[in-house]
Length: 340
Image (spheres, rainbow, N blue to C red):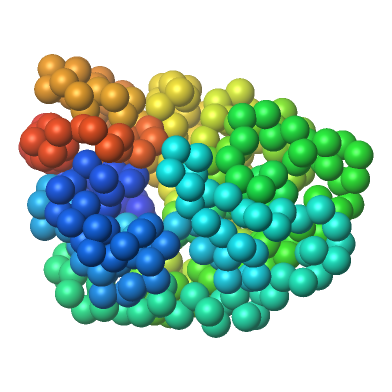
């Protein structure tokens, strides 16, 4: 698998490329399956349909890896929280964590068992996916997931979480530890089900100052990484902490690939972290609206990473109104221009 070889710094015929959110709303084929499923969560729980949309970008775009179709919040959902997705508002938990009793009511073991539909999606996908294409599993990072669990949904200020961080840090650590335990077991089950690599998304890493992030964010990602590596040393792990360009010097751990978001200069990430880690990213997603912008972005990134271990990706997820033709053009251009 070209993608796995790149994760392990082995020679590849070209720079492998995939996109975050590649199984999504910009594809008419995805929208048809989602419509048939009824709603987003129903699609996540229908392993046959979830597998179908996982494979779609590989067949339609020619990406070098499929990423499991699911959502980071299925873990707190199955731990016992009440999750719904509101149009125009996003995910909402009607029973956010406010007390130790709320936290105690959440069941780690039950959650990992209840997520069987995810493992079934992985098994079916690996069975139907071309043998030369990698299947990436994933989870959210404890800090990012905890923000939703504490705030009750998405937030622009993180005020409730941050108030907890500074007024009752012990309780926040308890929440993060329990979420990390659930995620560790969940990732291991994904690996046993057949994924070839795992990415950990810390979408809200940039919400914290550096000292707070290292204590309440990075520390818990490494807790997952170290436990998974102890059991599955050969499975590549990708960490994507969005928005931490100011403290790349502090990044260290037993993982193979660091995802670089589009707001972090790739030259800076390369100077500080390559070749110790394979860098993944980091084209600005809105460049996909224009073919000339795609060409300029691809050329610049390939030149920046020439001779260094690299996986091509966007610096965040593909947007819903990007033309499919442009997405195809992007993938093919990366593969052709990087051919060795």
